[in-house]
Length: 293
Image (tube, rainbow, N blue to C red; front, side):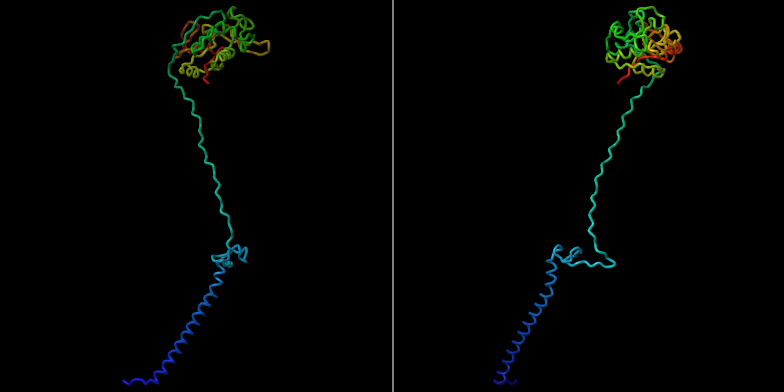
């Protein structure tokens, strides 16, 4: 191979150096231009990102991510600011509690109260007081017959107080010596703390329920459980009341399918339902019962 001459070698070197310089200049220019274009392109985006919705000149128009306003179109209206509904707490309904019904008493075919004691009446017409204190003694309250009698109000109306002399003759009607009906007796028993209730029209079923529950009943009958009859008497106050000659009281303490057992003072005897009811009905099935509170 033929070597180049020195003259040829010297002319090549300057050309190489010149070419390298021009390449450097061109590369530098291109790099600077790209950086300028990039900075000019990204500056609006950077300014938009730094701009908060509060600082935007498009106040009132919702802004998207980056701060650009959202332009409504026919198919996409501007979003509206809606408040989130807060649920209102509702009270939980409480269960309704109904009172338990009173226990029912099963009525047996027969029942009798064995533990009650009776004593003879002291005065001729003190049968109501005798029955009342024997009845009270069964429920644990001790009362003297004459004390009870003395505390009864006096009246010519047997529905309001004792009529006449308690030691007078029997078989009469007001205004003569007579006795007293259920209401004043029950009121005085209540004053002694007993839950006594006077009733009129007491039914056979209720009598059985009371005896089955071990609660004796004071009943107004005719002496000896005779049939008897009622009369109407007009009081001094102008009120008309039913009265009966030989009005009497006893304590009903038992029953069976055929009749009832009565405690009359110190005597205990049995009467058929028919005989008892005929006598009991004269004064309208009047009685005093123990009414628990």
